[in-house]
Length: 238
Image 1 (cartoon, rainbow, N blue to C red):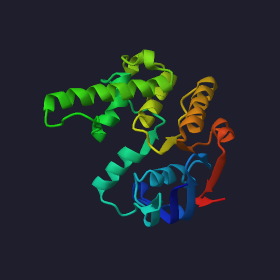
Image 2: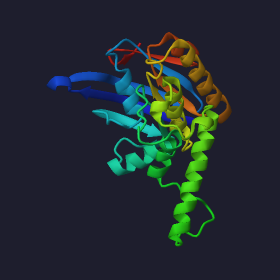
Image 3: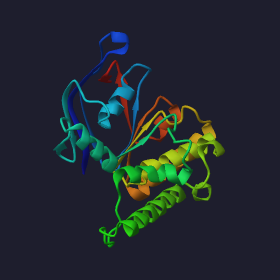
């Protein structure tokens, strides 16, 4: 099944006030269940392309489709809701909230999403609120169990290793059951053993759950695991 398609994408950025063409009329298609990597030297446009795929940044011109529906010119509110429900993000710096436990960090996506529990009478506000919190906690624990960290659910980020924090970030990216997970240089701050373990985990999620993973990376380890490697240079496919 077609997951995402990009037609004639063109993106310009303005670092330090200087206009730079980051992506040059690029057309690309991803299918459900892919385990793909975007590769290229620094400045090749990897992060810009990943941001375009995730609808974090709009293209200067071109079109973005998700399952045959164009999302290029949706409103900011509509795009935010689309991201919350369809895309998971994993960042190099983890971006965990230090005042929340691992489980709370994972459940935060569901809090934003406003996840509801079928079968409850929502006019009974207190019961509804309790039920929703209980369901979100259960979903968060389920995601943490999938990444092997359920036993650390009530620990704060400062009490976890770098690899454990990245696992929490992966759990947060998958807790709302997205169809696509975007991962930006996620092994950059990790040793090779931890990186191998995380990639094993993501490959397992890809095979068993059918989650599409798209990486931005120049790490040979990530590229060797990818089923498809998309090479970029100067904002163009090579």
